Length: 171
Image (cartoon, rainbow, N blue to C red; front, side, top):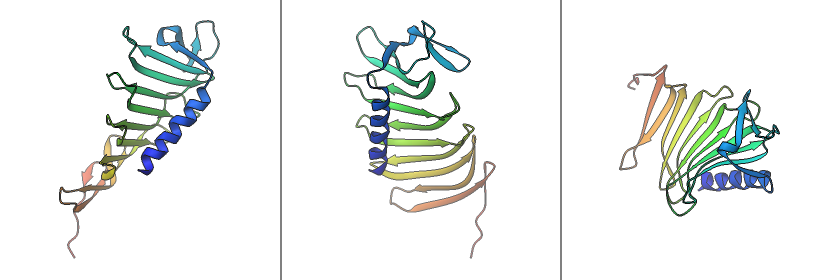
């Protein structure tokens, strides 16, 4: 529940930041040296979108002074529902900060957090709003604690170092 509220707040803040600013088609912008520009050479502050001929919004990226802030991928349907949201590092264009996946109800089903260099650090999965998986990473390898839950609700805990599961000592 708290993650849903946090994501709503993030979306609202991004919405306020881009309110009244340019909304362009992806083909109306270009990238030069990691910054995004309108065809007239001005840095884009606003939204670049990919929209199908039938009017369905497929994908959009939000920019501030040419720097990418976030992107949204939408489910294919009549409603405008985000399936995947990517948030980028504030001072490092195109470096990941967080990825969020949603179900059709708008509930968070997975989050992936990255460090300041865009290296994966933490994955969380949710079922019915409840945490069902927690795993620490160092890039592509599991590194640190991992928790998951059985169908009966029993918590399983594992420890990984550089992708290798560590054996637990028996008491």
